[in-house]
Image (cartoon, rainbow, N blue to C red):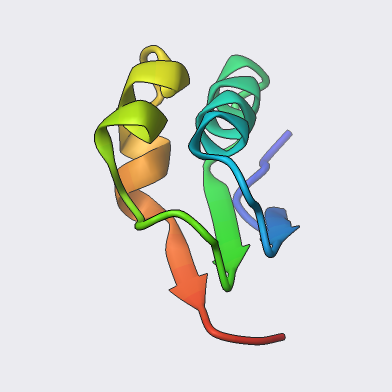
Length: 68
């Protein structure tokens, strides 16, 4: 089953840890596309990378938009 056409969207995430944890969860289930809408923390940052634990590729390929 291909997951390449599925994207996960976080709208206005407030904590770096939430973004990192979400990326880790996506990686655990073999998803790769994360979209962030107007994140409050600077993206990417060290907390996001640290919390993502092995999902750095998901963070690096994430797209950031200012609004929906």
